[in-house]
Image 1 (tube, rainbow, N blue to C red):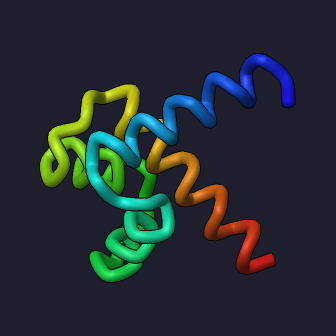
Image 2 (tube, rainbow, N blue to C red):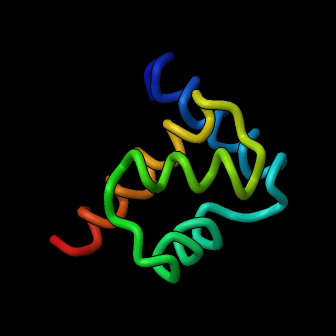
Image 3 (spheres, helix red, strand yellow):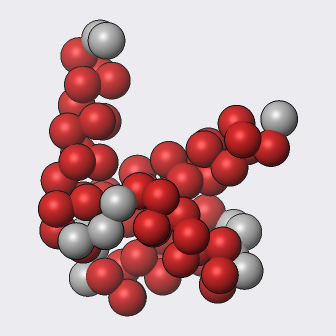
Length: 72
């Protein structure tokens, strides 16, 4: 794992600690909302979980990327 991957994983781990939810839990929440656009998902994380912009942004990206991997 390179430094960038390690940094992103650390950020995702910290987000899970802040929210008290696993990435799978957060992905399920997104699925239940029906939101599909990155900006909409990011805004929901900002609003509902009080995350900062960077954390909400990387979390939205990770969840969308994961959804595409599991669909393909």
